[in-house]
Amino acid sequence: MGAIDFPMLNASLNCAAGILIVTGYFAIRRKRIPLHKTCMVSALVVSACFLGCYLYYHVVIQQGKPTYFSERAPAAPSWVGKIYLAILWSHIFLAAVTAPLALFTAYQGWRGQLQRHVQVARWCLPIWLYVSITGVVVYWMLYRLYPAP
Image (cartoon, rainbow, N blue to C red):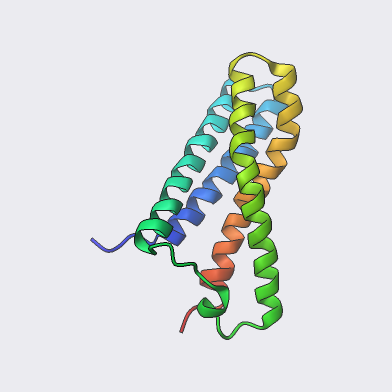
């Protein structure tokens, strides 16, 4: 059995969370409440799995050593690296906001505080979706756009 490709696993978990978020959104728009709940709780679980895998990879496997775009993609023009950093920093900042926001949103729904749930979800959903999508974009830019030599 080969080693786990954690960056690809993490991107896949981000992608799965994004799909679940979008499916949950369309489910609630169609008043399919049980499907909405299932999708959104599943998105929380997948996001938690992502966080566990991400931390394990960076703390245990990488031993805290950061991954630099310029080292992974030395052939990339510098402007691509700047775009990568802008996406990465927005992703990191909004991911830190999304974790408690998504949990708070879910908690409001679970408690039946639907008016508050909807108010917060209107902010949470696009931010969470952005974080999921940019997680995949960061992976693609770092590992696939300019493959390491």
